[in-house]
Length: 428
Ligand code: DLL
Image (cartoon, rainbow, N blue to C red; front, top):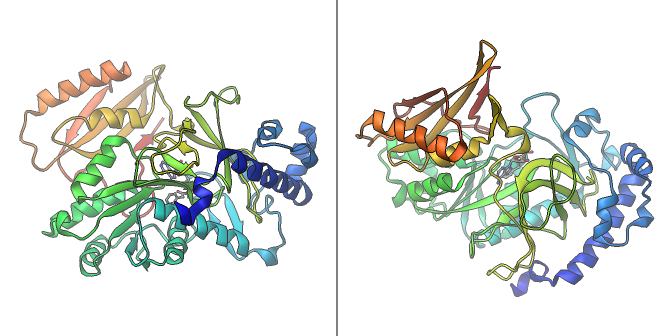
């Protein structure tokens, strides 16, 4: 840890640094972003009031709707000529959330991604195949510059071209693959189809993110590719990938790079902070961003925070991996559940492939759910038996069962080669 002192810094001095940076951020937002000046005035807070990190609680929150309302650049705090790059969120509905970066922001971004890669166990000289999409999505370029900054070799292949992807993994002897968790599985599947045993590839690590990944899904990735799976988290509004990352030493939560991002967890209903270790919505404040400083951003992502020191020696807080978002909640005939809960139950069963989809419909004013789950190629058991066992287990764990549970043949459900996987289709 000695070369990376900031990550093992004692919490008292970290909090002092955060307080100083919080004050600067609020000042910047107040001076340069009319939206924030109005919101801060309305909340009766002035930048000079910020004396400690706890004072963040007096600040107003920023929501996704605020980004959309201020489209395209109402939240920018610098002049156009200071913006070196633009990215946008991958949202599928409404206007995209546009973000900009100054030279300094790009530097911070590559620094936090470099840190994330080191935490993942990547070393200078390694070869990293970057299969996140390049373009407005922050995944491709975000990882790219961090990989170069670390001194590793980047293969900027981006998403898609999966056969080529597999050939390059083999021929260029990539040590690390960076991509979404669903795509990592698709790469394994494609390799098998090409007659290449994924375990024979030199690949040792997959750094997956941009989508939720439950524990059974992670196990499937690790087993099928014979790798260590490391979770990377981030979002465009805050910077992109590299807000937090799991360390390979413990693989027990994602360290948030707290010298740049200040986390809180709130009850999504009341907006109040929850106690340490309790689940709630992650709220992030940027501490060093110039172009788009963001105050108390409601990410919608559900997690918990742990301040216990990690066995890796890093003192920075860990967040639990994000398996759900507050707006993913499925309400079917009055019963609430998250897709990730369904995923965890379904993937407990042997012979089930990590591919499923949930279709919600409305018939005669009643909500109905169809759950389709794919079977493995090798499955030779009794379909009816597994179907009824799965229904019982769903009932026991989630207190409800889908109206229709379809076990489908291998390869029947669509695969996502580019972008983020969609598993829930709400036709209501
Ligand atoms: O997905 C940034 C990213 C790129 C992260 C590559 C990791 C790797 P957005 O497109 O703005 O940015 O989407 C952000 O994706 O609020 C989460 O809901 C979800 N998300 C991101 N990382 C994870 C993760 C990128 N590791 C939104 N686990 C976030 C679960 C994740 N969900």
